[in-house]
Length: 330
Ligand code: BYC
Image (cartoon, rainbow, N blue to C red):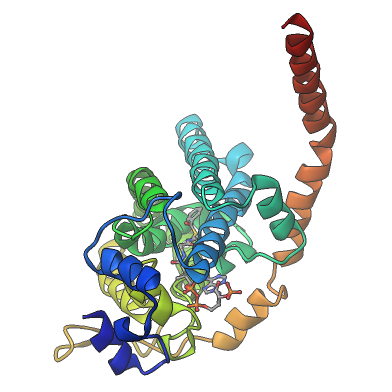
């Protein structure tokens, strides 16, 4: 099956016959859906791809707290505040599981943090947009967490043990996040005309960036072919984007809101929606650091890191002192 896939993509991946014995045994394990664990042999490219993807994912969870954290003090009721607080804490937890999963591949948390703060590592494009109204918190839960689930449920079956296991808990929590977002949207969409307008405005602003979360079109995706052969990714970017559109459009209709796409149309033949052209120019500008909030987001993380320096130093000094005492007592 692997060799067939390679032939059909024609993107120059080695066939099983061309691999050396170690690599072939590794690929056969992947093809047989046997999980790879951290201490086992793996090709360097597999290790690097996982570190890149898992750390970018972890950074997304951490940076993703910022746009929502913006509304914790302004949530409209005590209940909404408690729920949002719990959701934002969950995102921190997701970041930590993911950093731990990446650490099993031989990179340290400090190295990953350094890559984020220096702008070398990416985080999801979606978090470079501002949260202007309370409805944005609804739209993020509904659309952004909805897109995240669409992407992450298949990763529960990915080939790398620690990543796949981390995804199980993350997906359970993301489902709760998606429901809380949709619940906010339901209240607003069925509220006063002003509230409904606010919900529509949030959908207008978050719809296209949510579609961009799945990454560039398959023809431009650099890593998809190899990542799918290694089962680091289980679906292509376009497959997941299509599934997301098909799932989300009826949800918008139920809310009585209009998806901001004049080309959106049910296609009987493909049993899915046709949808309009995504502005990939906007996506690539964000990746270059030129989105509406790139500088603010990175600035916030850099400030948090430097504000925490005294605390990290204190912890290290304490741990060194304890170690010295232990040695002296022995
Ligand atoms: N934003 O070859 P491709 C969340 C980059 S948020 C920024 O297709 P790949 C959450 C890509 O990194 C979601 N960059 O790449 C929800 C690559 O550049 P590099 C986080 C992007 O890796 C609510 C280049 O474009 N989820 O969970 O095969 C609250 C070419 O792309 C984006 C994950 O990270 C983007 N949207 O596929 C809080 C899920 N898309 O690295 C948090 C795991 C592409 O060569 N990740 N790029 O410099 C994945 O599934 C895959 O990494 C992607 C991209 C589908 C995102």
